[in-house]
Length: 205
Image (cartoon, one colour):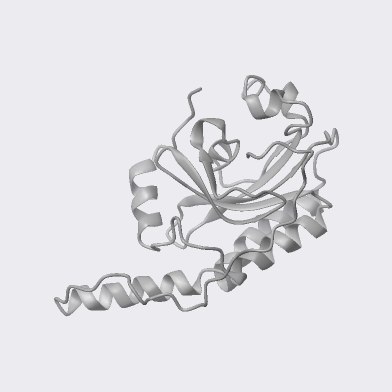
């Protein structure tokens, strides 16, 4: 399966790299948002992911026991093409996803809604999304759409300060001509995420 790329893909990846957050362990700052999204939208799965290269990395996840998937089976890789919330009432009826094995599977992905994580520089680095194994023909109403987008936007204020501090410290080190790695620059204690398992739904976005 193939997947689309944003027109600014190279610059987008460069912006994402500045945060040094890919493949890092779960952090409570991010878990709060996925847990809240799952509750607000009564969704068995909520994910905050980052999309880079040929993979999507799950920085926080409720309802799945995965840390990443390949990008070719990712619905979120379509969501980062726009700055608007993407809603798929029933993925089985969407020509973009009808051949996706995780949509075709029994009790697989049916409903999807994802809001892009837009960085201060204007790049869509990933999404905050909710997923259900049941179709939702009505999708999201205007208020729900705004709520999901607001959660994604607020995540920059409460979830990403650690990444910004890492970026600033590295920038200062470069300015001093120092050779400094990212080691020891995390500002929050890393921990294992609490995951709510849902055996009925396919493990992918």
